[in-house]
Length: 169
Image 1: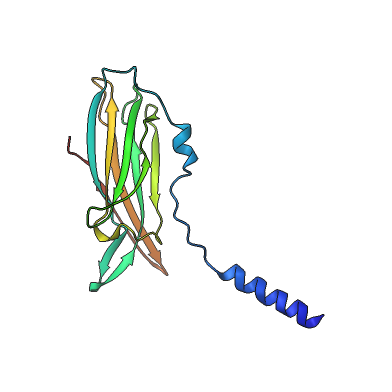
Image 2: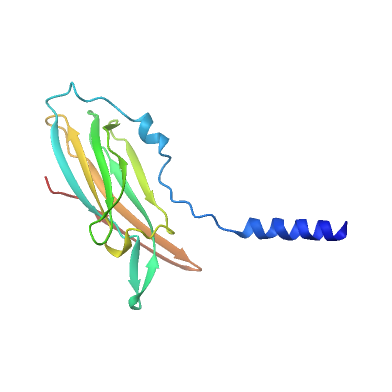
């Protein structure tokens, strides 16, 4: 009986220490809840924004990298109009598409913000990862704002910095 309990305790301890790799971004169900049909809104203006994101940065030399948690903050800057995001695609350092978070229109209500999180353990993007975000807005509406916030904390040391999206279309 003692051996059985010892074996069970050891296995329980072993399995509780195994870290499960989970790549997450705000619950994907969130995107389907935000899905909207904009086919009848033919007067919307189109835009595309480039946002640099750093899931890794170099540390000490070009041969050592430091992983970061990155957040793409997607913000509606209008206090009156709803804006529509039609695609958010994540690319790695070499320009290869890593994943698309949504490829159907979603809405952001006036002054609303949502986020895409790149976990610290997700290093697929590398040191030069980036997003292309496509959007549509009503005429006269301010453009949405896209920011990248990267951070990491180890022991008593912390690192954080931001980037801002740039309209390319």
